[in-house]
Length: 309
Image (cartoon, rainbow, N blue to C red; front, side, top):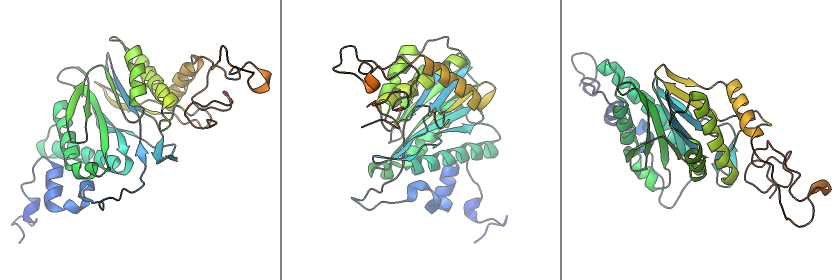
């Protein structure tokens, strides 16, 4: 029976949570409503490394562009960093399709709350809503289709940027200074710890995130560094008191070139024999190569596109 307003009863008295509304009205449209046969895990693309760092005016988040499917590269241009709303950003790692749908649902959740309540959630409130979405996806996560986001934003009440990490059960943890998730996160975290400092500028924080992704790509085959040959750069976003914005490709090109110039050449001090072309072993490399760049480092066995195995 319809309500006297003309809408079905389920559409009246809608609360501030779009997830609760969708679960009541049409649960089959939600990504977490899917099921996978026991013992059957489909081959699906997986997103990899996301890094984020606080700086004096807010936060920077960056994601590499590679998606993998088993041992294969399924995409070199995947986008993994998104605006959650005007003052927050979310990055994704894990099962790509599930993660992207969770991000879209999260964006709807925040927009729905603002329309119903006439106000925006606090940054803590947004982080809690994302945790609830992850908890609802737990059955799929337990079957191997897990998505692990990284969330950050500018807290307008406190006046600085904040970072939140999660586990597949929906556990929420506030991080300080910097953090990373994904297959290359352990390597990226080393660069973040080494180079982060308390009075970083926006420019320094952007460079820090690019360097962290470079370190991850150097040791993790599922993570891609900046692709100089194809002109594919990481997606980098900045959130300040003025709102969310992506870093312009021209700026990323300049930053990547600066980082590239600082990479030491690959050399072998006491290696046997000689390298390609009669050079001392390993001296065929030169400063300024990304991992696996066979054009600059012939014969390199370091991880990355173009590496000679």
